[in-house]
Structures are given as C-alpha cells and as structure tokens.
Image 1 (cartoon, rainbow over the protein chains, first blue to last red):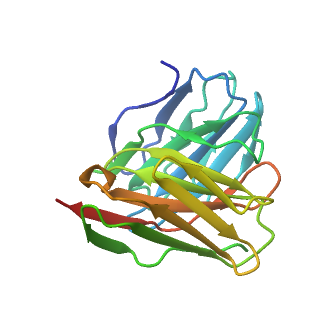
Image 2 (cartoon, chains in turn red, green):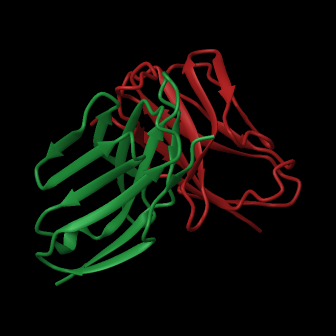
Length: 114
Length: 112
C-alpha cells in the first residue's frame, strides 16, 4: 500500500538536545510538508519542499531544520533553539504541490519534553 | 493574511441526524477549500476538495459547498453514524502551489 510513514510515533527530548523526526513516502509525490499541531489549534506550516534539494520556510520555521536529499524522504530536525517543541508533528505530501491536488498525511509524531 | 475559523469547536448529535459544519475565511482570493477528518492521535484524511471555480463537491453522504463572496464553506454529512465521530478541519489554499491555512477544527460526537 502506498502511503506516508512517520517515525517514531512518540519521541522525548531532553534540554539542549536536537531530535530528528522521520517522514518517508512511497506515493511518488514531488511535494512534501511539515506541520505542527497544538491542542485546540489548527495545523501550522513549518517547512515545505516542492522538489529534491529545495525547500522553503513556512510560517513557524524558527528552531527547526529540514533536508530533502531524496524524493521519498523529508526529515525534520527540532533543534535546541525551539523553546516550546511539545506538539504533534504531521508530515504530508502531494503531487507536484499543485493547488488542485489534496495533501496526504502520515499518522504523526508526538514530541514531548523530558 | 488568510484566517480560517470553525464554529462551533465541538458538536454532539444523535445518530441519524444530519450534520452541518461551518468554515469561514477572511480572504476571498482562495485557490481551493479542503475538508479533512482527523481521528484521535492520527493524521488527517482528505474528504473533499473544492476548487475556487466550483460551488460544491459531493462524495457519498458528504457534500461541501463554497461561497467565496461571503467567505464561507459548509460541510454536510447526511444521516450521521457513530463512525462519523471525529474532528473535522477545513483549510484554504492561499497560493498557487497549494499552501494551506487551517481552521482549528470542529470535534463531532455522534451518539447511538
């Protein structure tokens, strides 16, 4: 089955530590996205990538970094500069990032502070 | 900046009743409007996507309308079932590549 796989499902971060969230898709989609969801709030865009080796900042990129070395992979690193990282992180993909194509989502990673 | 609002935040209905979920947006220059379903602790599932040139989309018991002039979209779910219990989010595409601005969602409970 084609889809988006996020791992791990739960992740804990210590003070001053960087952590990396994995996102892999086998849908052959060009565009990939990272969102953050806080309780009672909608999703907010962190980073997006329309093509391999290219990515752009979203609305809340500070304290996060990404890479897009392969079409199927778009890992997100939550750095120690992100002072409030506790949230539910969702990865999505779509065909060519076109406006008439829906985004497909993974099942998310829940990040908490130790 | 586009702002998307969903009211109410939560809704409970008895099984069999029709559901009406509201979504409003501030900027009528919207490229599309999407409705998603989210089950607890899970990702989002795309339900319907309405292009800016369309007025509505239908899929089974679901029907979504779009009125750009009034800045509103409505999701109708006919003959609700307990399995429809979930959070429903709407999102508007704010540019040509499909960047989405999300509402906070409406949590729906359908009681047997």
